[in-house]
Image (cartoon, rainbow, N blue to C red):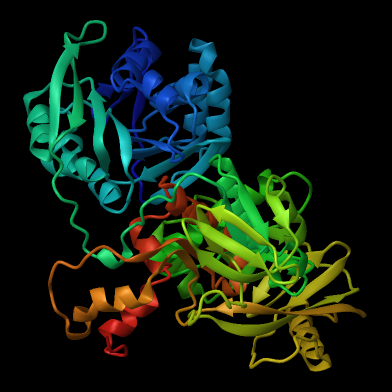
Length: 619
């Protein structure tokens, strides 16, 4: 069981009622009409979505996801009027289980047939609720990010700029925490200038909390039997204080095409996410990816399991779930679910279970192993091809990158200049010629294929064996790489044979093939994803960190529109999809699937900030 409290529900006059808060989820008269009146019209969404053509997503924030009815109404409105992408962020402290949620959506589809396609899509993508934040793609151009957990914690660990808010918690008298001044201040912090909010409640405490947070408000006629509702606009927002300004989000890139340098799983993940947000990706280096780790014959989609509730534990959980969902949705058969197991001491397995971070039934432990449902084998090249299917592909590798009223790329062999691009994402793996001083070290790895009968599922214990069609895939070796030729070796093949024999309990059979490639590793073994500093300016701006000086530091000085997704190490197939969505959100100004603490954990500038704090850099 997860840490999240389940709602106690009853049906009351044709609508759901929460026994926990003794309040209904929506009007028994006509819940959809109420939603469209209070939240859709209350935020003037038909006009604003039709007028919104700025290149960045229109962002809706919501307090109280509940049955998802407001989200369904927003999707329907966007379908009719929207001109650009829509990102929705919502929070729910008492979430419905997948089973209960599916039952509710079935009733919604019967009662309001116009919502049926969206209700069915929401059921297909709705995750089993776990503490933290999860993002799903509802359609091309619409993403939904749900924060499961207490409202204050959820607001304080996200970083969005909402254009409009649906304030739809249970009534203030029943759920006062949802309407507190602290919560409204957090809402204001996450609202774009002149952003709006709408709510059914006109309670004096709600009006006061909104006003204190910087919103002006006005009463409007309410829906049905309710005399009034509130419409609000952020007119006097207080300054946004950032406890770690060196990790502040960059301004969104200008509207236009985005260049991606690198055509492995990292570049493909950025391309897929950009395309889903209506941005045209142009990928360079497609013809030079044969040596990349993403061109291995197959790879594991298995999670890293952490024995504690930490940002890292939540990130690797979310990355695994996001990757599995992404690969299942790809056309073709690049992903083969087969489940897997990890060798683990029982006390460590118990500590992982005690975090209650994972969906019920996904992990189970027995006989010194943790069994993982939804794990599988991926053909990286085929998956990357599917993810890049709508991108513009440039075979040539990049020789030069320059910024001059936009980014321009000169390809190496044909000396052609391409551009301008509004932004550039570096996804070049272990080769970081375009990022001087990148905190990346190459690690040489080798996988081998043997002709013996494959195991039915993945088995890992340091090394791994896995089914690869009718054969056995095993690996992977780790070795320091100091330059020279990337090549396989008979010694590594024998090492992999010995390891697979131990895991299988038998010889893996006749050797068929080997492949060696370079991984990109980082000093802390976490990946790198996000905007790149102007390092000279960053060192000057944060020089006070060397002596622990407490002062108001400026927001991070970034290079204009330059981002990186690299350092994926041995878990790139798992982490690339969610990090591609994160980099895309940083480029477009949309909603990231990562919470702010995780975004800091993978931030490209974290090593510079760490070295400043340790006195290793002299301004």
